[in-house]
Length: 309
Image (tube, rainbow, N blue to C red):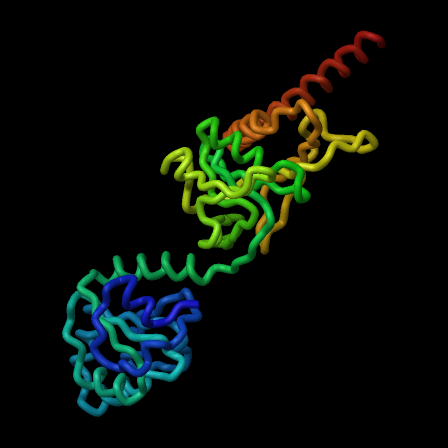
């Protein structure tokens, strides 16, 4: 959860009034510039958003009568309003300062340009307020692709991640991955702070990947793009041998590509995952080997059928 105090610290804002409300929660990632409200139209006032006042709003405000100024500021400051921010180092009107102190609405000021501050605020709030979940698995960065390795306990997820790190790839999280849905089908994964940089290897214990392999072996956060699900080889199960079967893993309201890899002695899982990541990149560029092979096979079958006739 984010409070007004967090916003102040993050963006180095100055508190000008309404100090008693600095612990108010910020629940909405949208930001408003109350231009119509300055003109007196409050019918659709989004009072649960951070309100940002720039040169346009404050210059119009100065044109109002004393009574209108007091009225507008009293209506602008509500108990559900997280805070009001004045940009470009503009001196806050005394009517706004009085209303914020009276209503307990934090009044903040910034030297940044209005558009610049709104852009940074929006990006920060969308990330911090995004839907979040956690999954049991390992997240690694392989050739720039965030690969989420899942599977039953003891199947070899951490050992495979260790081999990938030795081959020059980067570990993001082991055992537990915190995932946020920044937007539709955009999932960002990171480790819980308690187990950051750590990897558990059965029989060996917990190792610090950054200490052993250097700072270049770890990553703080990575977009989750591909799921490799490891499962013990089942001889009675038919596994995809061509690559035409498209599986998806649903996380929150988003979906990512899923590949099920059977595990048995002798299979080099790290190499398989490397190839899966490279193949994913090719598919994103429009190159699909499985579909090309299928088209070639169908063409050959059609050609032989015509010859037979």
